Amino acid sequence: MKRLLTAALISATLASAPSFVSAHEAPAAVAKADTVRQQSAEALKIAEQGFMAVRDVRMARVAIFQGAPEHAVKLTDAAAKLLADDSTDWKKFARSSKKAALVDDQYVVIDATMGISENYVGTPEKEAAIKKANEKLAAGDKKGAIDVLRLADVAVVQNLYLMPLKQSQKAVAEAQTLLSQKKYYEANLVLKSIEDSIVVDGAAVVAN
Image (cartoon, rainbow, N blue to C red; front, side, top):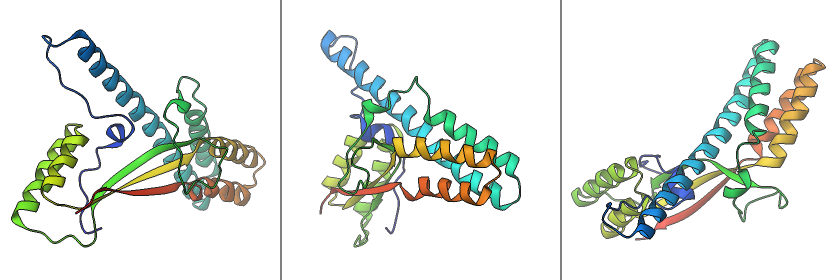
């Protein structure tokens, strides 16, 4: 992609963009807006936990190859703790994907990007629309951003990065055991399998 839009859209991807209502509007509308904001916050929390777990897994592999196994153990333990957090309702935001290799697993979004399609040809009007869309994304208004781009006839592709939760939990637990046995090469391969299992699910958001 030639140019990335602001990637502040994880929570907006998993839940609708916030609805802004005044205190004078119907109580049902206010309650709905509160629910949407709560769902967005929960979705973002899950995405952050998954992202941090994968980051710890990646850094644990680096630590192994740099000859710092004690640090690799700490990072792997941290990843395991994040993935095993019982206070997180992972199932609530689990997604399906046609690219999912593990059909019995729960895939959760850990990252997201939105970018201009490769055949994008810039004009002053389109550049202005992209700037405005970035501002709306930064404010959490994904729908508003997409509407702006649609009116400007800008083609956009969104990529979601999906992590298989069960497989990742199992793999990180196995890596912990291997590290305790000082089987560092084997532990690295198991940790690598977590990174390799992440699915990139792309879809056109706005078609020109």
